Image (cartoon, rainbow, N blue to C red):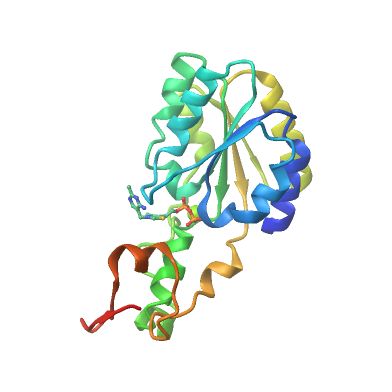
Length: 217
Ligand SMILES: Cc1ncc(C[n+]2csc(CCOP(=O)(O)OP(=O)(O)O)c2C)c(N)n1
Ligand SMILES: [Mg+2]
């Protein structure tokens, strides 16, 4: 499903007072916060750039506020960094909802590499950034660790499934199939020295594919 419809379904399906954990990178952003901001009691995220803390953060949030529904919105790639969280949730019956925004890729990295203006952009080829062949089966993954799960393709299915899972009080995983964000492939190039993302701020340099190093303004 396209992201605007995905976000609307989140807003419609989430109960009032839900606690959200956001580690969905290109599938979250302002559209997500606009959709759930009015009804959420809290939204947690990262301060730095490291991924993999979303799922376990939701366990902590649910243990801290057991009376509230806790929903973790995670990218598919990010979820793979700490998927053993699902086992812990089942083992100790921590009733967080794990909602995977499944776009089949490390999508944000494609945007980053395009911004380098190198071969990836020329040939539109990305090495090691597609989570396909084989695709990840989050249903089997969750069930193998004792967590019930469902896959949803449409906003209507998502809305119903999220509302039920949030009411259920048990750990539950929803594998939501989403379209990759179009904006993530439209980053300004490093060449123009107008790139304003975290990468440039951290490193101050861009590396071209032929080994040339350029300083960024
Ligand atoms: C610990 C750690 N390892 C690797 C990275 C590099 N990294 C940043 S975003 C990302 C991919 C995230 O993919 P996903 O969660 O599916 O989100 P999407 O980009 O598809 O929205 C990776 C591997 C990182 N930030 N932190
Ligand atoms: Mg992804």
